[in-house]
Image (cartoon, rainbow, N blue to C red; front, side):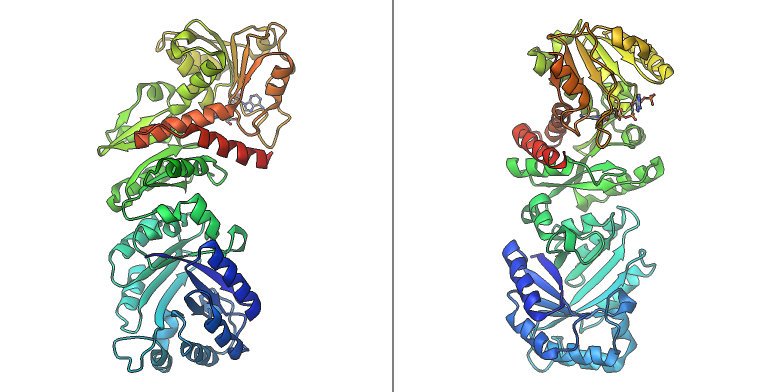
Length: 528
Ligand code: NAP
């Protein structure tokens, strides 16, 4: 069983014990006491081990291995030797220190359990190696060196991941099952190694008491891993999904999809997948994740700047491109089904459905609607294509007029609805059944932005004004439209529907839309 281990920096024993009690209450199954800064009172440390509410690891990490202990090495080892007699579950020691000194090896071997130990002890030795800057070139060498030490019960390697691909190496090492192991990638790319440690049977994963008090870069708090990343539900067969973007840390998608998996009992977990902005990175990372069979990587949401890259990638791998996604020139959903890749665009019909729902009509009744689209970027292409494919007449207004004209020329021959471009200056005097803002004007944090100075006089009670922006939930455009008596639709509706369609494509089950809606509202209200 992979344990959740909360790391506690010891400043005072009573304080550490109080923190330990809170950690246990929050669901920790093991504790690591980092005594780097608290080495002068061995009696107090003995008490700490005795009173620990959970099995514990004792670590005194020197500065040369990224810790804070600056004192004498002999004293450090003497302290660990003494504390080892109190039988913590583990003592953690650096491979470099262990290899360097026969005297140290001898002392540590006296207190830890190993094949030649004569006195019974419950303390195991974790031999560890860390690289806070990079993936060490001798990673496998370090792994083997620890595996070959009879005194080492546990292999621990931690390094800074250079990309999401480094996590796969951590999983491969765990799967080799040489010994109980802890394989962790640090930094922004390393989250999968921490959350999926359980899928590969790691001894433990380290977590902070909360997100703010973590002890290593990329670590998350215990509540985040349990509630947000479904720790308790993760097992060997858990399927992996994610949201690919750059940056991607702000995305609401992990919140809703993980909650959706919970609500529907899906054996899956959904992770943020940061991939730097270019096709080379996208192809290398997504390709490696797909090719690593034990990952069970079954799909992803894809956002800025990778929506075009997804189409290209799936085409190059001989997968299937949904015709609407191909026409739009961008896809936001990757699905792996029966070993084949599918690229689709769920933004498109999500926007159409959000508007149709507000109007109380079905998709087929969109034929003949006059739809104004403001913007000619990725969202505008998806929104316009959805309406045009269902027979609506779409007029595109954009700051860069040439882009609007190009889009009309591309779309017009492809869809049953007519697509035209018009000068942005004509917008205030225009009339329409539906107006959709597909620019970023009004988006957080520039909430005063608005694509219109005033609502055109021709718009009235029957006009639907839909803002694709969902943060904030009520944009300035929507407030103005509401005051003018128009029907307003929030980008939240589109966001929820595009996510619901992804959920259905991946799981074959209807999405728990109300769960999605509640989470999005709660999180956006908190941000507002
Ligand atoms: P994009 O490809 O970068 O396009 C941005 C569009 O906004 C372009 O047409 C651009 O005009 C226009 N624009 C930007 N700044 C402007 C300004 N100051 N004045 C006038 N026009 C301006 O971005 P996108 O991916 O289409 O995203 C656009 C919006 O859609 C975002 O706000 C996003 O929140 C929203 N969205 C919502 C959902 C959802 O699920 N609700 C999904 C996707 C996107 P130029 O061509 O002249 O540069």
